[in-house]
Length: 145
Image 1 (tube, rainbow, N blue to C red):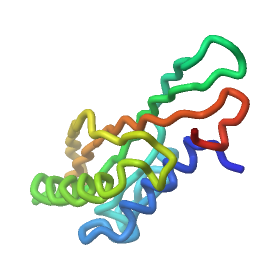
Image 2 (cartoon, rainbow, N blue to C red; image 1 turned 135 degrees about the vertical axis):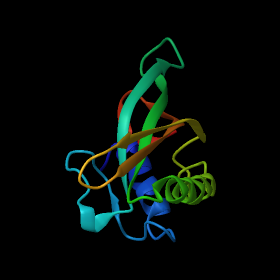
Image 3 (cartoon, rainbow, N blue to C red; image 1 turned 180 degrees about the horizontal axis):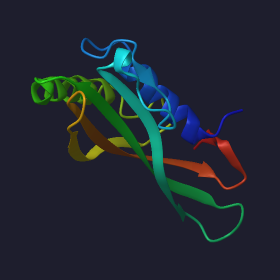
């Protein structure tokens, strides 16, 4: 079975796939850059996870706060407006199920940042960072509690 972290990430990928602006251009990785023919597009990946014990005695329950990034890639001269449209679509899609299919206690948008690059083609990247709170037993990271 998959780690709950992967299940949550996969749920977010599914939630943002098929949006009006980015369509099927959703990639569950940041390893490979999004090609020009796949923009506008989204990359969904894990940034970090903080873990805190809920109890003192083993086996402990663990509260986990997962940071997930959704990066939007847009090229062209109207990229600011397109980026804002993508963000509005992503925010609505992610907020539609804050429990990530029953695996999380909460999902909340905590930051947005944008970066612009000049070059052969103008490119803007917007990063939405979400915190997803969930819990597991320390002996079983494949099942949310």
